Amino acid sequence: MNPFEKTLKEIDSFCTKNKIDYVLFGGIALIIHGINRTTEDIDINILVDLENIKGIGEKIISEFVPIFNNPVQFFTENFVMPVKLKKTSIRIDFTAGLTEFDKQAIKRKTKKKFGDTEVYVCTIEDLIIYKLFASRYKDLADLESIAIIYQKSIDRKYLLKTIREFELLDRKDLRINFLKFFP
Image (tube, rainbow, N blue to C red; front, side, top):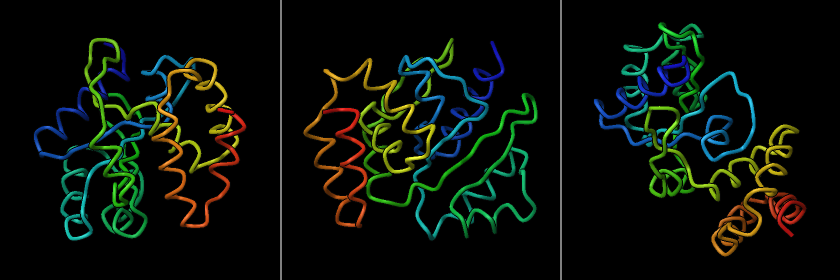
């Protein structure tokens, strides 16, 4: 079992033990969906309410090594908890899934294999939305790779509906970038 498999297995075990719904997104999700990409970390979105964020943060640091000082405070203020798994030293970014889109992505998750480890990963459509939302250079390059493989099989209706919801938040760039890669 390689270090990423070990880390993913620990994440899944931790979330299962603590009854935390989660979904993987980012580079590791791209790899699981068959996109040829490298990554150095694991991005995980966890379902959490603002009232429970401190308690969840404390649970995370009880099993993972925090990267910053005052990690629970950092989590409650920034909604991300960067940690490492001591056994593998792989960085894990636990992100608080607070938005309706995050809740929807976690609800729509699918269980997939990474090596011998089964984990919950976001759908390719939700991964597209996460990439459109971030819109960094590497995210746009990832969208191009996704389009090559999934152009004909994506759920365009779902994607356009979700993009419309983000347009209400003045994120018109999502549609523009979506149509560049998925005309």
